[in-house]
Image 1 (cartoon, rainbow, N blue to C red):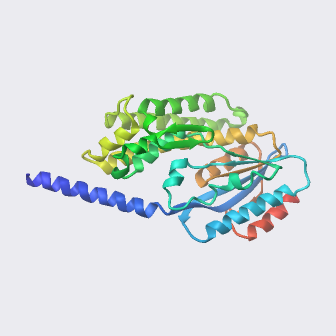
Image 2: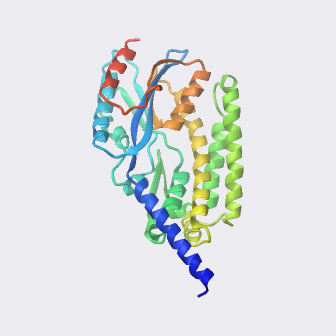
Image 3: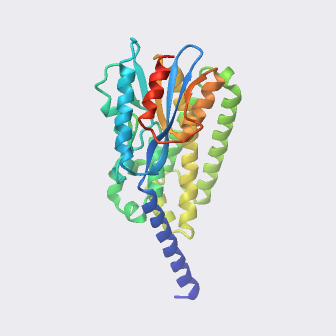
Length: 320
């Protein structure tokens, strides 16, 4: 074996170890609730938005979930006949199964099902997208095991098997969501500047995704799990895997932004609560402000973990 072949093998080994080390460090990162905002729409609807932020696991996760339940019970006892709609961005089932511990909000829907005044739902829509991203992030030992192809990913009420996710099916999911979300939105006139910018970002990310798929010679009928295997043994495995996975995630994130906005606007309930990633939450707040929403409560100025003090804020806000 020549010097260059030996050197290439060493580089690939070091690169794979770096990826494995990064994944070991990243695995314990779970979402915790670090901020909440309460906005009031011109029609009187209140929108409670909880921001999730990735932070190392600690004992506070269990405490947060208990506080979250207390907040929902507090809302439940507010004198009103209207139900609260709780919408949670829940990660794919297999992502949670592979995690060392579930994130704090993962089980919140099941834990509040008994509260009659709450309608709780998983509002995730990116089944193929989350599945593809997970496969491209997985270590080679996992993607080489064909059993992973039978594992199921979920997004709300949609389920798909990992082995069934092809490049073509992934792109079809994106195109279907774009057609539905970009062409059928209420309040388009008021949201026009923000909406136009979001659609431009979606189109730009579509182009970038198609370009990177061409660069790695991805075929329409190629399974994402096979693409991940092929890229793992390529000349630049880290660059290629991160490049493809990143572009898939970027496009899915933009489409999910529009989805949670539409779900919020179409809700018939006077009180909505959204638990989602901090970037989605920030965009949603901006969109609602464009529609005339005003802030009643915000933790924007001091990023912090959800704690007992939040209950006081909620009690005050509910009396407004």
